[in-house]
Length: 523
Image (cartoon, rainbow, N blue to C red; front, side):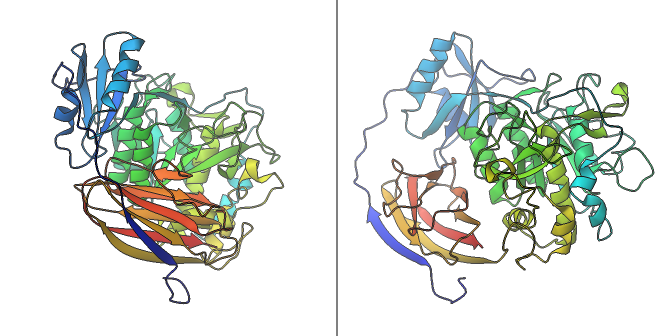
C-alpha cells in the first residue's frame, strides 16, 4: 500500500457502446495438426492467437484457414497455433488479413525468424576481464552463488556436460524445441557453440580449479530454440520461454533478436514476467540507435555491450530502452570441446549472460526479491561508467554493489530502491465493459512503475496505459499495451512521466469476471 495508507487509485468506470458486426462466414479447409516440424526458421508459417473463452484453439483456427494450409503446431497456454501455407507470400498475406477479422481471433502474424546476437572477431586478450570489470570477483567474498537460483538459456543447444559447466547444469539439463525432443545437446558442436559460450558467461563453475569462471554458481537449464546456424522461429522461442518459466527459472537469458514486434513473443515474455521470471535480453549488434526485439519489450531488461575500456562496443545497439550494460567484447568463456573448450567471442550475446549471471549471484544473496524488485535493484546498484543513458542505461551491472547493498536502502550508483505497492479489485460484465483508473505518484522521480492485471482464466482482458497526459487510455489511444490472449497482463515503464497522473484502462476483449489490478512504483 502507499506509505500514507491513502489509495493512489482513482476509478472512473464507463460502459462501452454495444453492438458489433456478426462474424463473417468461415473459409474452407479444415485440417488436422501434423507431428514434427523442421528446426530453425519457419517462414512459411503464420501464428494465430485465439482469445481465452473461445473454445478449442485448433478447431477455432482450422475453420478459417484455406484449403492449401494446415495447422502444424499449437500452444494451449499461450493460446496460439501455427498454420503452414504451401502457397505463395500473397496467399499468406491475404489469410492474415482475413482471419484477423474473425470473432475470437486476437492476432495473426508471420512466424518471424530470430538469430543469435553474436559478433565474432579474432581474440586479442589472453585472459578474462568480464568478471573483474563487473566486480563479480569481489562479490564472491559474500557469495559464490546458489544452486537454488536457476538461469534458463534460451538459445542454441548447449554442451551441458562440458567440464566447466556440468556441475552447474541441472540433472535434467533442458529441452529441444527446435527438434522437438528432450535433449538440448548441440547437433553439430563445431558450429553450434553459441549457447555453450553464453552458459559459461553466466555460470561457468566458479572456484573449481578448471578453465574460466562465470559470474556465480547458479543452476543452468537450456531451452534449445535455435538451430545449428543460430536461427530460430518465433514459435520455438516463445514455447521455450514458456517452458523455462514453468520450470521455475528465476532468470531467462535471451541472447538473440530479430523479427520485430510480434504478439506471440510479447505474450511469452509477459507470461514469464507475470509468473516471476526476470527476462534479460541482448540489445542487438547492428550498431543502430534503437534496440532489437525481444529486448525492446517492456517486460525485458535490454543490455548493451561495452569493451574492456568501458566504452560502448562499435556493434552494440543502444537507445532509450537500454537498462544496463556489461562486457561484450572479446569475452573468454566456455565453448564446445570440439572447438577447443574455451574461446573469446564478442556481441551483446555475451553482455547479456554476464548480466544474467550477476542477477543470479544477487538473488543468491537476496533470495526474497521478486523479479521486479531484482530488476530495480540491479539498476539502482549499477555503476555509472560515464556513458550517456541511452548507451549504458542505469550503468554497468555491478555484482559487488548488488550483493552488499541492502535492497530498498537507496544505496548504489543508480539511485534509490524504495517502493510502494497497491492493489484494487474490479469486475467487467462483458466485451463491452471497461474500467478506467488514474494513479497518483508517490515519488517525484520514480525509476520504474509496474502495472499488473490478473483476471479470470476464461476471459480475455487487456491493459492499456497513457502517461504525461490527462487523456484516458483506450484500445485505440495508448502509449503502452499488454494484450495477451488471456487476462494476465503486465506493463513496465522505466523513468515514467509524472507531469500528470498515470492513465490506466482495463478492457474486456471478450468475457466477464473479476480482476485485480496491482501497481508497484519504485523510487
